[in-house]
Length: 377
Image 1 (cartoon, rainbow, N blue to C red):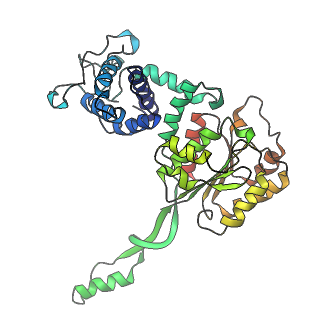
Image 2 (image 1 turned 90 degrees about the horizontal axis):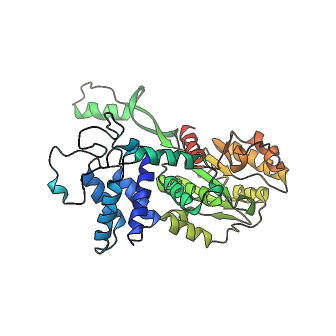
Image 3 (image 1 turned 30 degrees about the horizontal axis):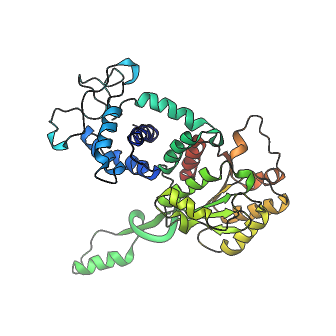
């Protein structure tokens, strides 16, 4: 089961549990996604979701009813619903009991052998999730946006590696003289095998610069959730800044485990969210403070904005300066995928030559592709 299929299935289970009167927060769904990805039996599925969704003992009865109803949903293709019930002591599971995705007759839900571990209804849910993943985020309903938020939180955003000036054991090109001599001393002066050393590798730093002005209002939250996922994946090598009426460092607030709590902390900060912006001036202020620090040098810099700027020449000059400092500069533009899109904003037209890549950021698929791009450079 892919990460998107799993999230879609568990969002459906969370809806069933909410219908029984149990309050399930988005953060609990995210916890369930991570927990269920490590189990492959019905008993494991039951206990992982029950522990994630039930905060009180009194929630268990309602959860069991919702779980059994969700588990008994008809499988794709009109086949019979599942009859096995996992809402029991997992110690009662026999050796011959089926794993997740296996029907009573030993046939997978799609009519053939299946070892993917898919829960019931995964094909239908996957199709619905694919549609949501491709749709523009600002055109989603509140419920659909909740589902996409779970998918964004489940992203794992890692940067590629770079060669470090430090040396480590290994390789075969360079002899480690000191270690080789120490080995000879321990052996009484007799020749021993040569020790070698090589250049170590370390992950690149990631810098996210997010435009939170009014023109980005429909996408700022999704991009901030993407930044939260990046900080959670690499808290020691990721820095996040909001470019609004002022430059605001958001990394410490985004280290909060719960994405909802992290966003509430960000909204409470004086970022100028939803107001005006002067991108060129704010980027100049950012570089004035951070240009000489390790956070920027040789990093992957992601600049998320639609490019509306009253001083396009200044913005282009500052992005050119950022390009000289960073390893790669990626411009994320939610308007990039719009039908008939042309770079009408002067800030965008003047600055495209100063960045290495110009990519869309309007949907979950676009953000997932951005995560893949970050890890490949």
